[in-house]
Length: 88
Image (cartoon, rainbow, N blue to C red; front, side, top):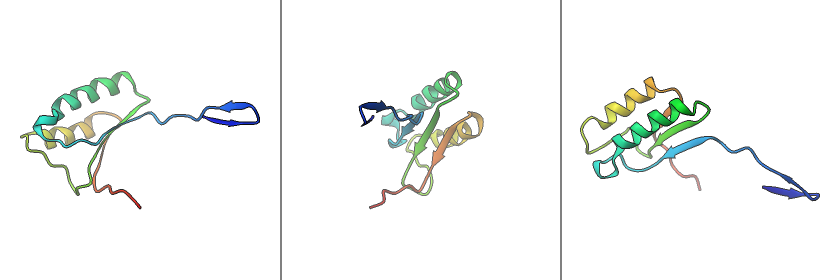
């Protein structure tokens, strides 16, 4: 919120959910995928991003990478972003 000349201007918020946790079994990535699927079909103006700093998705749970890659093709506005690094 920006205050100038006694007027309050609200900035538009980006409607994006960012999942940046490991895709290993103890983090329950299949549950996240189910939530993302239901959420995006009922909130089509939102985007859901799964992010990693690695060059590709990895998981210690069988089938997770394939399920997420499938979701990216099947679910509108579900995105996978790999190779991300903090600038600075």
